[in-house]
Amino acid sequence: MNFARRQLLALVPLGLAGVVGVAFWKMLDRMSVGKFDPHDIGNPLLGKKIPDFSLPGLGGGQGFDAASLRAAAAQRPVLVNFYASWCVPCAQEADVLGSLSAEGIPLWGIVYEDKEAATRKYLDQYGNPYQRLADDAKGSVAIDWGVYGVPETFVVDRSGVVRWHKAGPLTEDSVRDELRPALKAVA
Image 1 (cartoon, rainbow, N blue to C red):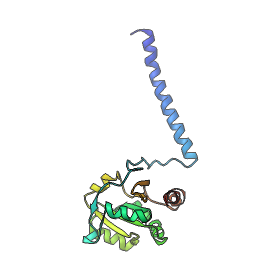
Image 2: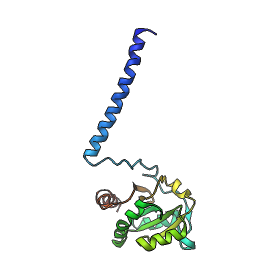
Image 3: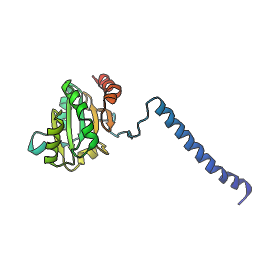
Image 4: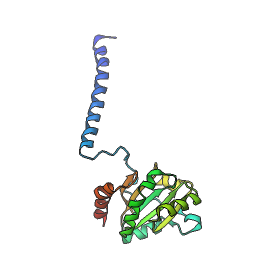
């Protein structure tokens, strides 16, 4: 191995350290202005039409499908919230969802891989803010929506396109800083 090649190989670790340093600096910079969310990995549906699906309601009740969601969103943008009774962050966001529903914001829920009895107990304990509630017992619709964990919330605009996504629980801050501007933009 000649001398020039050894010098180049010696620079590889230095170059990697530089790339890592720049990435770390950018992360710290975004954190300092409140624009870094380690939970947000993006969602493949952003800017795209919702996928076709059809889900039954909880316990044989009225569920919903893509066509009914599109029809409702054509009147007014709809929030779609994936949640489960076994999900601690879902319980943490329950009051926020209740407040949004009380304001008249259309909120449709999709129960993710849960048992009916547990879901009913959850709704009895935390309230049912959903106008429509569907049961994704197998989790296949969640996969089509790009959900990687619950809770996750989406804004579907008047043309049936996903315009906003939040991975993790909604908080008063995220509603004020993210959701309300997103709803205003699609109103």
